[in-house]
Length: 188
Length: 188
DNA sequence: CGATTTGCCTAAAGCCTTTAGGTAATTCCA
DNA sequence: TGGAATTACCTAAAGGCTTTAGGCAAATCG
Image 1 (cartoon, protein in one colour):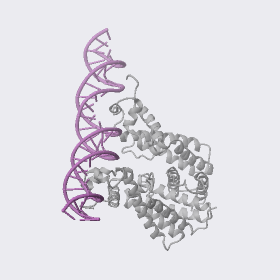
Image 2: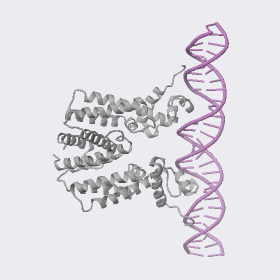
Image 3: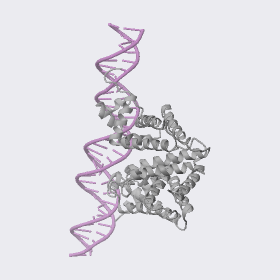
């Protein structure tokens, strides 16, 4: 070791911050090197490729998000749990748009930590569903419905799709969560 | 005019095909020039920039999709209309993944044709909702819910998120559409 | 204290974007 | 009909990002 000390870890963290500032797609090995004031080639000792850098950022984001989701769901059930979980995703996407976008990045060969975080997410959704009375395969269907709707809403909202009509997307959001809650209560 | 005749129109069309082959993100002015066997710079007489090319492809896709959706919804109502509409989106995404991805591209300053197609889509969803009894603002909420869920599902499915657990995502899909239908019938 | 490892550097090749400035063929019209 | 204007595509060039190869100096290990 020597000098300042770039590491894969540090690069992923800095990359996550950069993503929030300039957008996940604009995160490049070059831009990151510029931030650290070092030559581009230096980073290639720590990340295998541009895709590898993005994958690491994705893992950071996915893990961070799982941590928050976990906290939000703890001690809550049914509607309260659903609402808290959904809000965590949405708030995270608003505060950390770059990181949230990173979350959708599918690595060529995901790190174990990445896979773990992915599993934690689906388990959290299943935990929320314990408050409703669903057996398989309905439970899996419900996991997919929830994931689709929440991720879909966040994405369309951030793309500005809801910005040009009333009511505000802030108002629609809780009503849509309510609707999902109702739906889950009476899932055929 | 002269020779073969590249036009913005033709480039958008060829770009759409290229997108389906290699992915929307891999569509570049260079790649397209290669396909046409001309120098890269030549294309810049017809498209303003790489972003402009992508925007044109997006417009082609959005319009194509609106046409199909329109056909699918015609003569159907309620559940049948909802299911047909959702299937059009999903089938299009599967047959034309590059074009479908293009659909999510938000142009800096959208062409009128692009805006029109966007409007057609939301009007089609509202048409489907005529089969249910919703007044404003519930109707807008429902439009957003439907859009979020359908786009979200398609996206997660194409990212492979549903590929590693039972039941198959083909089986979940109709059940999720059913659930949405039920939800709309009893929207608070 | 010498050998090894670590950390960052220079160099270079390859691909993509975009602008500038032609050139030949076609079309318009006096 | 023939010169002017336009059209369609080209060469040249600058600048950015990615990635590999090879090098040197500082820190650490034995």
